[in-house]
Image (tube, rainbow, N blue to C red):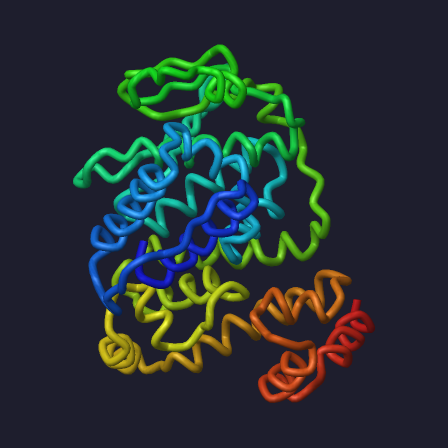
Length: 331
């Protein structure tokens, strides 16, 4: 987690708190640049502050029940729209969390008759039970959106001590919940894992997923390739944050000058990479789906369809409508 992502997470939590009728807003000034551990520490401090402010011992569950992954930008969009099955959803959660966070992530473990999604908290920071409550509760709610509002995991293990009031935990996780365990995870039966997820726009989702996976592979293959890292961060911020060079540098935990210098060493520029990501996705969306241009414009971070049309015309020398018609005529 870096500065931009921290702010995105805080906005995500503020929206969840609002739906849960809880007053919550970010406090204090944040540094422009800092280590991933620094911003995770801020994140955990905010969660603990909220728990103390409300006096609610299960505040993490309340937030998790109201947190919408769709509000986490393209990362959330991929998770909630591009997954083909519940198991694919867990696998995407595992894959993307590893490349986005080096200190805290999810890990999917397939078993013979089930699968487990483990939550790995930051090991070098003080334990925050609110964080693990929020993480597991949020994912249960996400799965419930596909399997029904009464669905519960086959098994849930939590590192936290057994709470005095068990009802909120049983309601969310069922009777197969155990506390004081070594790991935090939920377990889902094989039948539920194979349930197909109906996407609202499968072609748009496939286009995004294909490109996201390609960027993910490039970023993992070459951690020193700054261009691949920039494109992945651009994808994760499109539609949710301003994708300026300063913003992306902050999300990568480096200064704007350092980012510019490293890109120049690879004989490219931030503008070139940004245009490449936006242009590639725009052309895939236009040629591989019938999604309205207004939706595509919003997904790519443009304030209006007109501003998207101007940008696309400048990049490709043709309007989005004309490009879509041209590609349709070629099929």
